[in-house]
Length: 402
Image (tube, helix red, strand yellow):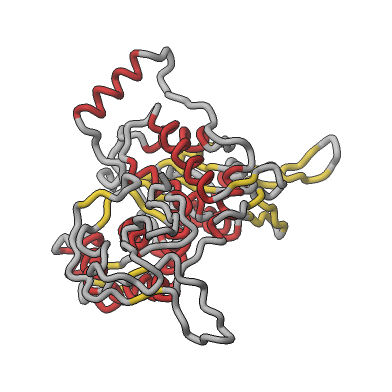
């Protein structure tokens, strides 16, 4: 993509290649202070670029809070932390009208939600009424207090954390609110080398909490978000998302499958993944890499499946295995609806074969190894590989944007 996209105020202009470099700079800046897999960073960054929200579930001490704060710092955004407790009130989240004795009038006092990146720490410790106070903010980017609507800053991202171990005295997030999160991820424990690096970094600073300098200039996040809106998603790649979602609804272990909202969020996250990889089009690899992060938390399992300890990620994996992977031809021209109704720039894979987990994606994420390449036949526009390798003479870059 040669054309560039201006930021909202016209102060930032980015091409797709420049956007990929910016995203890599942000990831590397975060890695200076946080020991975390790149998979987690790319999933989180995809949610930010897709104008979504992130739910991080992990045991205490793995760096959930630090990740949220350092993410905001690396992106040059304002950060606010909201510690959820059982006695927290909705007005403690959104703000309230306070009487000003000098002016003899009520004026609105903004709550901690009025910032760019909001850390909703241990969100499952607050009662449902307080949890619900975030719903309008997350979906509408605004809050309503006493009949008056107050817009939130742009960009606006909620990074919520919860502890899956200590459930005593907590309130599980309802399905309606889990569905508002574009991505759910988990950090996990670092490797031995990772923890050694963590101690090395701690020994080289005099503060307890790490911090980083902004890796981008103001307005870059909005420019990345606008760029994602122009990413092309072919008709058969869109159908690929839908078929995976429909497979979850037909699984006998699932009571409620992926919702239409979930399909849209997966679509948006895939476009953001293409921006991170330096492409102007979405590949099936973008979908497969993010299916677990964008879909698993939306499933409601049956009672029997819950008792048996079924992992929602296994359901997503089975749904992905059941759907054939389309082959993408990046150089194929966009179909003209007047001259070629129903035409598509995607060719069917001859036999994608079974899929499996375990291979590493070019940008550091993990992706199922079996469903990422086609049978090796060439598409009409030239030789292509579904993993995003360069077509002959096309100049199309690999997924990493390198």
